[in-house]
Amino acid sequence: MTCLFIVYFQILYAQEQSRDHAYDHHHRHSEISLGAGAVLMPWESAWGFGLHLHGTTGITGWMGAGAGFELITGEHTHYTITGLLHF
Image 1 (cartoon, one colour):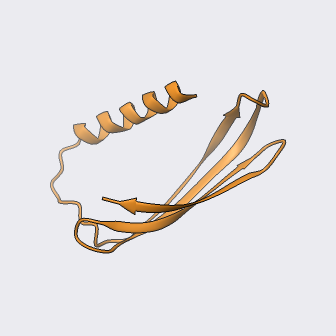
Image 2 (cartoon, rainbow, N blue to C red):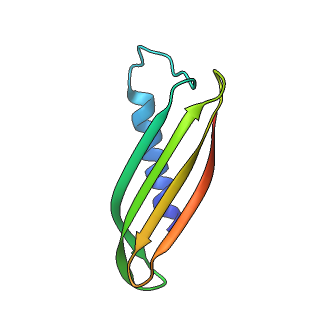
């Protein structure tokens, strides 16, 4: 599972670096993001549905904060609530 996360992170990093940015990122802005997909739970040998939602808002020009919520369904339902700091 860790290997999949590392590969996924590297793919996203490569895509981000390949873009030509004609703008600057400002953390004064707010962001809402939603992601959904299939989740493999190897300890249960089952697949489930995963949903991730987070929102952030800028505090200063270099930092933002927010909250996240994650839901994984399957044989058991799992919820996670997180606090976020964005630099």
